[in-house]
Length: 478
Ligand code: G3H
Image: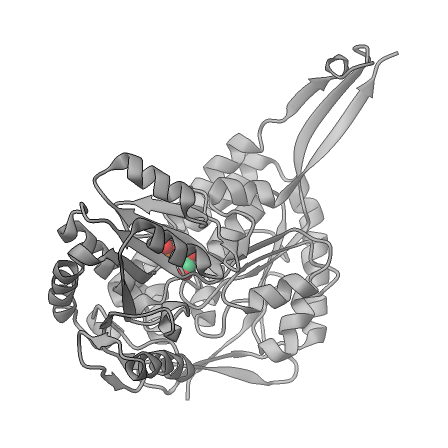
């Protein structure tokens, strides 16, 4: 009936007082795999107090010592890659190999954060007053970066470890404390990751992880007066969080409808490889997945043939077998994806493969001749279904990309670098990749969405800066 896991607060593993739990359903078996504590609002209040007081002394801990602990946690995390990856396989059906990669990438991210933190937080500015009109050199201004306080970290199901540490590590190196609310699917993987930080020996109360029902503690957490910053990755919920949150910095990475614009001179073999990687890795459940292909009509037939041949080679099955396509995260997600597929069918899209679904497992599907009146032209399936829209001009492609309410990433394939830059400038997205599929990494690159895709910028350096504020001291000379 599923192992029961405790939540983490004050450096200890605890059971919630109500005795209630939340079940985590294995997407492959559709059976309850694990259970986690259903924390109450009272328990959240206690955690907030702990995080607040732990942060005060952590902020005074030397930067090099904070970095040392992070390096230790990174090494432990990598040592624990096998059991954590196993949880990822069971909770979110991530293919076994990718699950290991997620943990290793996370360890690297934590180490890089420690290194970057000691550099960028190790220096401040010195300003003199007489550069501004009317002033003599009577004031010296010293700046440094100070922590914000308690950071609320809310990662999504698709990277419960990596997108948790991408918030935790910058927060900690900058002198903040953490309250982590993992996604329900992925909560046990996140708790294992927190265990690695526990083993590294961070002070009690500095890192806390509460689990529970969104309906009970979701709004309560995000509107809690003890929270000084929210870093959230996920879906539409982010928009409602940003409306309800108080006057605190927010970092939000929400959905995407990343377009892949293919020009007539593109290397179609390269495009096909990137469409497969970009559209179908982790069964399309990445915010940066290629979610619409906008291809010039003259090369569309050739490209579709190449992609079709590669789709036929994708293996479909359980994550334990390292299949390329694995069950999507939940029944409601598979139903949503199916709704988009049926809508496209009704409106006349060309099915390059037969639509097939067993439980949460959806076979990879390429839909050609998609038109703007189809839902899939605009909505984010978060599944292994990819629409192709044939365009007759570059402008049409840019127009479709910019008409989306999302603006995360996009990509353009051409051998003409001038055209590529021109298109990149015209695309209203946070990042444009030239001749490669969209991706967040390497993890020190800036990562940001515009419009409904989010606010603020991530990536290691930007996250550290975002989780600090500038403090100035002015020396007034006689
Ligand atoms: O799902 C959203 C992630 O930030 C995407 O990361 O590009 O490494 O898959 P990724």
